[in-house]
Image (cartoon, rainbow, N blue to C red; front, top):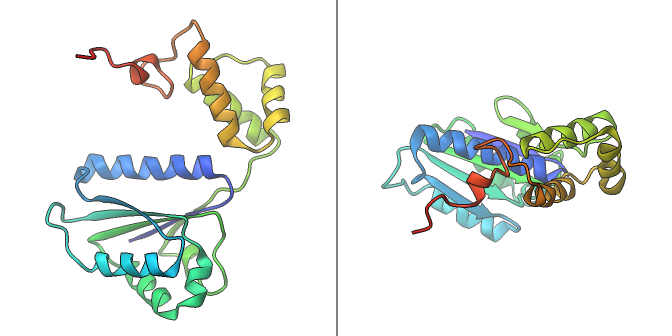
Length: 193
C-alpha cells in the first residue's frame, strides 16, 4: 500500500502522518513501524533493499519516509517501477511525505489506487478556523481580535501558530481539556517515580 502526503504545510502534513501511525499502532502494534529519510537516491535505494527483507516481529510493516523528493523518481525509472509495484503490496505500507507535488514522472502518486493528500498553506477563513480549533484543543479561548493577530503575524505558518498557542497554553491558569494536545496530564507525568 502506498500513501503520499505532500504540500508546503508541514505541520498539518505531519499531524496527518502521526494520525496514520497511531491508527496502525492500534491495529498492529508498534514493532512494525520504521522511520526513514530519503533525501537522495542512495537512501531510497537502501530502503528498497530493506523492504524486501521480511520482518520477524510484525506481519505488516509501516515505513514512514520523510523528505521524499519526487525528482528522485525522475532520475530513476527503476525506483518508479518499484514504487508502482508497492501499490498492491499488502504486507508493507509506505507512507511518503514531501514538500513537493508529484512531477510528471511521479504523477501516479496522486492517482488511484494510491492514497494521497495535499496540504497547501491555509489562508483566509481556513487559517482563522485552524487557529480557533488549535486554541480550543489547548483549552484556550480566543477573541476575534486575537485570532486576527495570529493570522496577521504568522500568515499561513501553521507551525508557528501552533508553537505560540502551545506557549500560551503552558502559561495559562486554566488547564486544557484532559487528554487533549497540550493538556497538563499529557505533559507532566502523574507519578515521576
